[in-house]
Image (cartoon, rainbow, N blue to C red; front, side, top):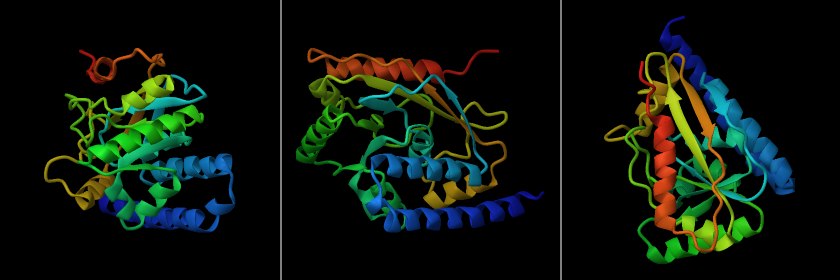
Length: 249
């Protein structure tokens, strides 16, 4: 089938899927408990990958209980990929996302913790809010690169939010995300860097062939009150970078 027809079919299914998600958030979330919301979040996120023709493989097992997920950031689809695996994850995201048309409502419905970029006072508030969430048994996720990167090499990891795990004395979960397609260790279809616009990125994904996401859950890293957030951030970066390094041969 011509790629143009494939893209048109995916676009139609995508629009219907987004509308269905909005309806669930507006009409049903208010009456659901946490488990019910998480069930819908997982179903919607997994469904999003399916309508876009994206396959998903998982290595490792998600552990129950409170934890701070630390993941590399390679695509605007990263949050949906993580939610397809761990719908309980509450993401820390820039506050501007809340005002995005359509997507803002979906992100808000997933219990997102918002951060005002460039505000040290707000950064401190988010650390405290995240620590409280971890103490309450929640799973919180964030991208320490702070923005979408090229895949490899990884951008520097910012470790401020790791202070929340230290304050709550809850473990850190390194999570590796690798978007790939036939002949490419890192997919060019999901690139969202430089001058690439969201519409351009969506267009590339709609026409991609064999696009897939690989999620690798590394062992939980224990955290104590004496842990150093900078050293912890560097450890996370090294562990994730090792998995992302292409295998020779």
